[in-house]
Length: 442
Image (cartoon, rainbow, N blue to C red; front, side, top):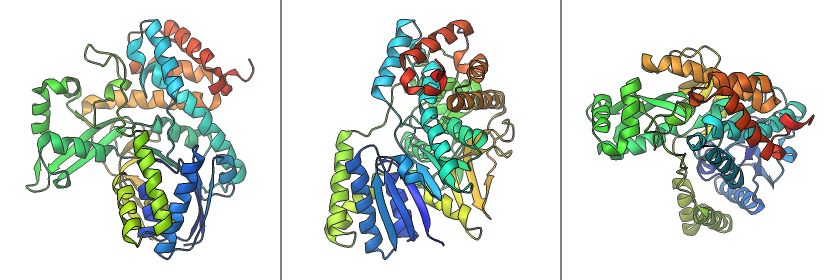
């Protein structure tokens, strides 16, 4: 493989960075130029130095740079992997205060409703700037991979759609949804997770279990899981959607309500379950420092690298996706890929972004058919159109697209459109510095 320049935006990402570094320098031993970008300069430096130690330890020729400035790193990149955290505590608090004040507390959401729309608009400005920089400073063939941990505030499907349809940048998304679901349902059904095959599909942040198999016996556990959830008082929300759609919600927690109309069972407001705190990041920094000093082939360095690697996602491999796209002779199967629909997810028009299992071979992406229940087809089609309109609005400041999306958004069912528009406008005005595309002429 020719020397490739790879930019990792969010190089300290707790869930994604370990597999990226492992694939580059341990599994595939790629000769490449790597730019580690992170808002935390210490984390960017430690990640670059830890990666350098892995490269040296496993005999890889690579060059390393670190910075807090994404624009500085993007020049001439062959690929940009974005796994940054986009959640802002102050912005989230502002959304909550405004919505709670007007009696719309249930719209305080991460991906859906008015709260999710605000999050989309904030992330959209960042992504639009990245797209403009890639258009100016990168070859048109440069790839963009967006990563979603489900906790970092990346509206994955919307941003993939925006970058692809609005800017023509080859973009795919990747998440750990099936891994999270496997972990939860393994515990729930008391089946060792490694003996449980789980397939999820649908839209980003709106996925459903399409296969649930006990590998020891080959038995499908779908019906058993539905029955147990319907009888479990702890799973009332999941049971409600099983009744509505004949499908088990994917994920560690039932978050599908974010993109749907309120019901008496939907939460008062979204609670973000990340499980990652400041202490985890401090431990990550300490282990990166140990890896840098001792190298991966000494006991201390190997122990540090083992802790780093086991703290990340196991099934999410952006580098493996890039290799399969760059080298037609290679192929790989991806558990959760956000991609333009090619018919693999039933009910969603071709071209709109969906998420599900996929195969990459011959440099082409093909969705692996994962039929969702017919009860979900119309709502998935509607949400996918809403996502496209919000994506366009987020990166362009197009208020017409914004209004059209709000008009069909299932999450705004029962809320007067004019009232919702007025509330959103006040929320945007309060955070106008984060939304320059909507206020440039103001």
